[in-house]
Image (cartoon, rainbow, N blue to C red):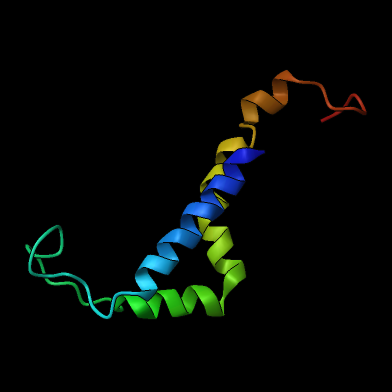
Length: 84
């Protein structure tokens, strides 16, 4: 399934970009209008490297829920054993 691959590929690219920033660019862009008290970008990249399993889950997690059938879909399709 290519969707999981592309999510991980983009997440790895973002982690590389964050690793190259020492601080958020607060002078212009989306961070200029408000204070941001969270971790700095390089700290986020370090966390992604330190905890790759959680990083991967965060990248592909939304697709896992999108692919999971709803309760109505499970009721509509019979199970292999004939019971739900």
